[in-house]
Picture 1 (cartoon, rainbow, N blue to C red):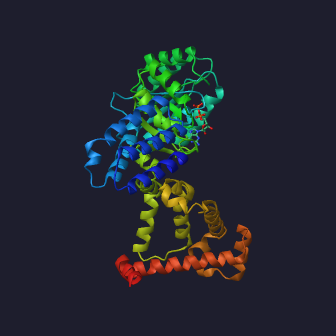
Picture 2 (tube, rainbow, N blue to C red):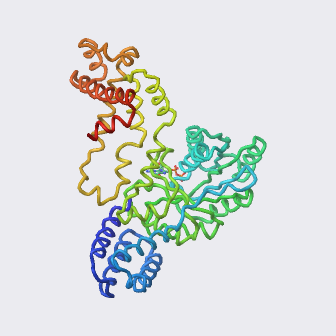
Picture 3 (tube, rainbow, N blue to C red):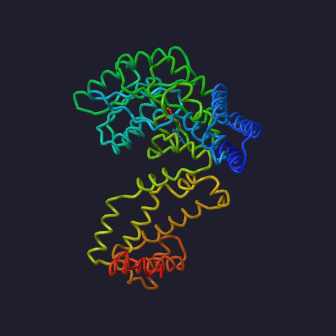
Length: 445
Ligand code: GDP
């Protein structure tokens, strides 16, 4: 996502930061480059125009001219305007209404509505601890109802069944009634989409809106859309009182036009973004972080959050307790640690969030190979018996041969893993004896 745009803007930023003096001429030059970069990213034309004129006005103003580092001041302005373009501050989902709070999902077919309904249900349930119910009012595609049932199950949300013989409004009202009686906190209504905007579709969703009076009406839009995004967003915004936007497929390699245009066109905040097909591929939208990523400054904050989310607190505490009690670190613990690493979303996910400048030289980091290696390590440990895992010293030649065969690897690999494990066990032992501080001292000295 944003790769070309980011490349180009990063180059502009580098050049201008190095300029000792900011003149009208080099400002114009920079603006031209920024404009081209945005157009190439397929940002809607009126949005580009506005953006450039605002940056220009500020760039030629006092704040830059009087700055000791005018180049940096200018970059600061581009950064601020880019952030503003996507919404300035992070916006929360609004749940401030008498429960069940209703969330209506709108958007074209294929935008990712059903997937997003599942993701949102999971987010509301896991992060905000809400009791969530979902329902599908898509009576044109039985597969869509089935799909919602599946993702709701994965999200751990209640699914209210519906079928294609019912009317969308009747379905939504029955679900709402049920949600009320069962004291649900939130009801998410997934709706039908068409491949293009048509009047019948708009009338249907308007009727749904009027019937259930949602607190949030979220417009789901595919970030891969370019100029088309403007028309689609406008049509939905005119037909419905939207309260927010969800940008999906931000993990793809699209140019980013929709992401940069949709806020300006609808005037509605982007609340979430989809970053993968799995339900875990869902994040709140932080305009300043996304702007930073585009300008090649990297998204370190998201990276840290991602890491925190991945680490299973209960697992970590279990290990800490075990170490404290003086019990030996065994291969079961080793396996648990490897699993934790896997949960961090895989190496590729982490690499994607690093600043593009930083990653330029490291383009060859082979995340695939590294992940394969982790899987092999897992396979080896899983080929051991529970007894062997808790008493690794049992592992002599014949057992090693059996384990290697079970995992489909060479005996040397089993040996290598055991050597790694020994190293880690050594570290854990010194932690148990002298505590962390002592170990750090040892490493430092
Ligand atoms: P709907 O017709 O609007 O309900 O769209 P779906 O939820 O069925 O999604 C359409 C396709 O987009 C499916 O193949 C999804 O897996 C995929 N999809 C949805 N959200 C994302 C996302 O954030 N990233 C990626 N890569 N794919 C997504």
